[in-house]
Length: 301
Image (cartoon, rainbow, N blue to C red; front, top):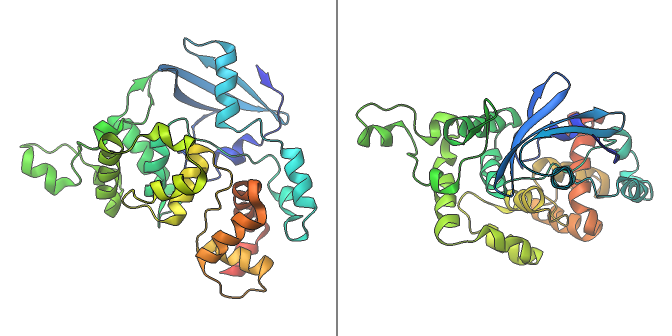
């Protein structure tokens, strides 16, 4: 089945967005199990020309499947209009050339995005995606022969942080601890985040908030600073006005807009949100990949 909306599936899948690890690649397809209306559904998606071809296995309708994929890959976002916006701004004009078809890769499970984003801080894409994938295989539910959902927050809050803690309570430790998945110092943050969203915060209320309220709410989560909070809101909840900013985005924005001057990450975030408005999240995504693919990032090191 074809959804006739342009996308570069591989670029979107492998772009390092902290919503989730890439789906499992099988030949030319990407496959993953998603919970849709409380039901497990195995999606198989692949490139067909410029569009998305898909099949699914599960007890939902074709309309529900299309709706879920439209959301996950942000297929209702008008890329043509966005490219016109880029072409109208000299600093951004080349970006669509290097990132043609790149879309947001949104979270099916916002809680997974929160843990993924915490795990991504000061970490490589390869390491954090492996850690989150390991967590799914250890503590998630297994469907359709080795496709795993992300574990519920109630499960993570009850895990041991490390082997030493596990050894205190188990006569035969078996790796039932967060650090066994390579999350390092982030383990206590993940446990505390799980506890907060179990006992104190309701994830379903965040999309109902305006951006600033949502941002301040997410900042209360242990292990979450401004950049991670913006990633969570962009990739986990589709707040497109977010402009996640770190040292790399700072260097790129400084080069393009501030003559290479040393400006703060906080100023870059404010500039991005004000300058790009409703396109801020997409511009940030394209800035990063343009810098990687064009060689600009190597020149800015």
